[in-house]
Amino acid sequence: MRIRAIFVQLMVWAGALGLLNVAIVRLTANSLPRQVLRAIAESANVTDLFVGNSVMVAALDRAAFEAARPGTRALNVAVGSTSPVEHDLFVHRALRLAPQRVYYAFFDSQLTRPVPSRWRDLSGTRAMVYYVDRERAIRLMGRDGPSAWQVRLTSWLPMVVERATLWAAVERARRRLAGFGAPPQEVGRFGRTADFAGLEDDPDVFRQYCADVVAHRTPLLAAVRDLFETVRDARAELIVIEAPMTSSHRRRFYDTPEWEAYRAYVRSETERFGGRFVDASDWMVDAAFEDAVHLSAAGATTFTTRLALRLARS
Image 1 (cartoon, rainbow, N blue to C red):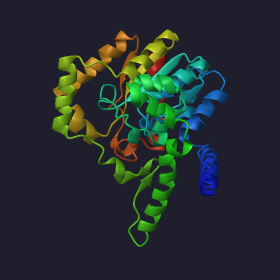
Image 2: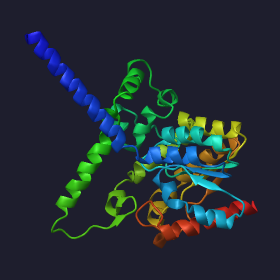
Image 3: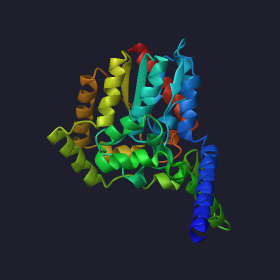
């Protein structure tokens, strides 16, 4: 009798977990990566494809680009809080749209600095590695043996894959409650403006890192190399953009011999893969930014128009 009771309890718990996972799948059907995947699946062929993290999300005004370059059709598959691993997965999926040009925006040492890819790192928008070309993601992250199987097994459990999506709702509610009676905080399209002010490295550490990359000829990340090779093999033009940054950021991090050497190294690596390098870091005035790293909507229109016209002339 005891065994039967235990069996019934196990079946009840299994059923409850099954229903919970089904509910989570439905709740996360409109997560940002899935919205982009649907946009790719539903899109007609494009001429210009844009990829990157939230810096590219903020910087591109698709309507302004198409107006500045008549006859083009643009698609932005950039998603915030993503790494080069996820960018490469999006490019592989979007190349079915036969773009003539692929634009990849970066800032700081994003193209060479190792990407944390532990279990706790693969959440939120980065959780797409569990359901978009999982095996490619495993390879790009350098996972093998038990750690590779951890990714494979986790991919079958939506409640684990989407854990950050659920906690995000809790965090939003917590912040609303914490804000009662407090002065309102400035909020932009990508969250609280203050949250982006503390993302920068220590300037001295950053300078040393850039110097080490150049001195040791540190290769681009595996995901970046794969992205560049994939675009080249698809016979599309690769355009790597050093994203616009505020004057404060440029003064602290870019106005140094180490960054000049790092930029030259990234440029040479881009050209080695047949790409074109565009330094747009000083294109925009500070008033065009809505926080420490993201252009405002008006800034995006100005930047996009300038980018389109410059490339059309070259």
